[in-house]
Image (tube, rainbow, N blue to C red; front, top):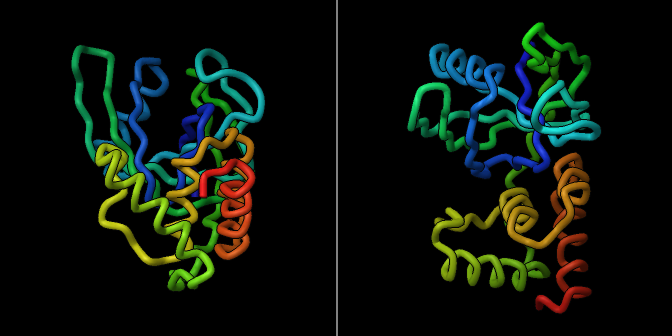
Length: 190
């Protein structure tokens, strides 16, 4: 699949939500095209370069971004709320004349939605507390599924972007949760 990429200094997880202010011509054109055609674009963390200006070098794994809400407060600017879809692997990249990064990608298999084991119940308690105290985070309704809980924790915990990227690339929900649980213990969050 050929996909336009939005390279950012953040990570979008499957099922997650991200607000974007789109103002660069390359991304305005990409957004208009995605809205018109009802298709997603890709969000990848930046490995090298910057969000603005010349095309950046993206991480090897990204997430499909489906536009769920779009507003045009003034001509040439979009305010978007996107939802993370399936993860993908970047196979090859190219840069169009307008500096839009495009890639040939392959879908990364979804993790099975296995129920959260009892050993991670404390993690769900923390996630519930965050959801109740910060309704704007959009965590409700909570889902008792290992991949979903791991992705949501990776979004709300104070992690560096590189750590979030490593958690996105991981294909093992239990390992992701084990790492996050250990981080929470070391940080005194439990």
